[in-house]
Length: 78
Image (cartoon, rainbow, N blue to C red; front, side, top):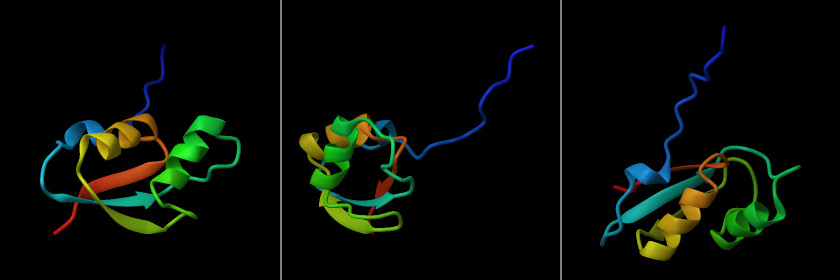
């Protein structure tokens, strides 16, 4: 018997590069995270759990979100 994870992440793969803005929120701690992931989250402008920033949906930002999708939540800004 295998257990499956039923966690649904709001992942960056649902997002598309375009002219719109993205709201990015840090939802998990960086303690124990891969150092590259820590630096990616910091370069997104996030400083702590619950901190939210608005970024352009360019290729660089979407790529960074793809690499740390387990630490952040991203959605289109209104």
